[in-house]
Image 1: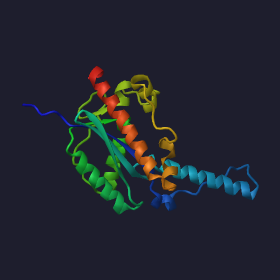
Image 2: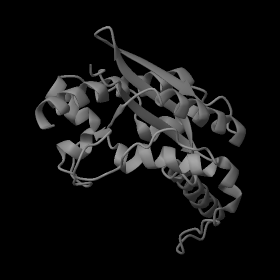
Image 3: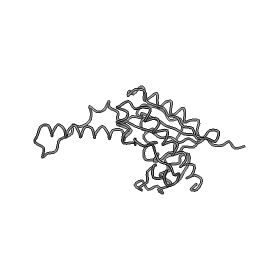
Image 4: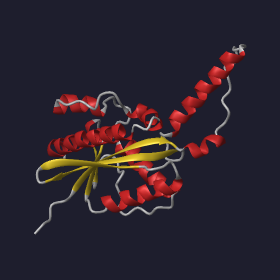
Length: 220
């Protein structure tokens, strides 16, 4: 008798790894600026832009929140795991918990997971010498144990327009959490708005799970 496969949708929220800020090149002001105050303001703005970009790479960012959704008793449940402190030890512990939790699932659903979430998780695992407990496939043009909803709906065209909010509206008649998006996570984190980040991440996971089930039904 075949056992039903356990399905998990997940999403990462990331922030800058501020321990590497001292290694970043010093920004240079615009050549046409002469006023000292304007030069300092330009340098400061460029430093802030540098920090914002750090969270986009597994080599310069950290996982601050791991959200996940699964179906239990016919209902979709969501949870999240949050980084406690911005230290290597705490992130390593978070990643350890993530891998051992998802090891009990068979199929994974993401939105742009091939382009971001999966390589980020794998990269941070390498950074912390944390062995993966399951190989989440990043194969293109086919679905194995990982369904990247965005990849399937866009026919694996990485620059095809279409956000989670866009697909959720036209396919589910639902919208993402208002007042926050991925570009604002660093700001929310710095302000200590951890509950807001967690809720946002869980809401995205719920939408991703629903889109994944719909995609699987008609595409696979």
